[in-house]
Image (cartoon, rainbow, N blue to C red; front, side):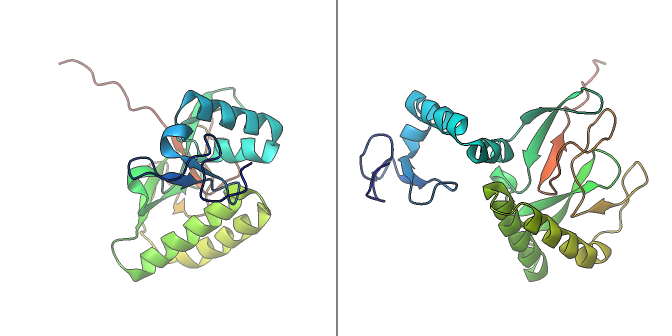
Amino acid sequence: MHDSPDRCELCGGTAEAQNPLVPDEFYPGVQLHLHCLNSPAGVSWTRMRAQADPLYARYLSLITIGHQITCSACGSSERLSPKASGMGAGHWEASCRSCHRYRVLLNAYRGSTERELVDALANLAREFRLGVDPAGPLDRVEQLAAEADPRLAEETCSCGDRFSLAARPRCSSCQEVLLDSPFHITLVASAPVSAA
């Protein structure tokens, strides 16, 4: 690794206006040019790191949108996504406590109470991704959910159960929990549109 925090880990270059240095969330002090990160060398760097470091491999799977996973109960191929990612970073989804469905429950733009909850959940998700003490963030989400769930939308899921900030993503086939993470949702492909 490069000793200088203002240099790209891959090419050794400094930040450029059209090619900024992006800090690596997992490895403190490591930065890569955006172009280097997305290059074949960047993909290779990421793959080698994941093979050498199981915690980094776990981290990569937890940040991947549409991460493929096989249900341990029924063998169904499912896709998971981290919450509050991409264009929806100001929203927080809540999964159903009994099935694979979810709905947006929090909107950070509606007011300070929801913004504080989204920020607290995002910070706990970051701790969980980094894997220092995965049980700690899970316990704190359970506490947050116990306080916040009753105050949030009363809408029930089409299966009849309630949505919760602490609910885990479930298999769309058998409804078994796919991952012990309240920071992920199950992505389900839309039903095909029939021709008229």
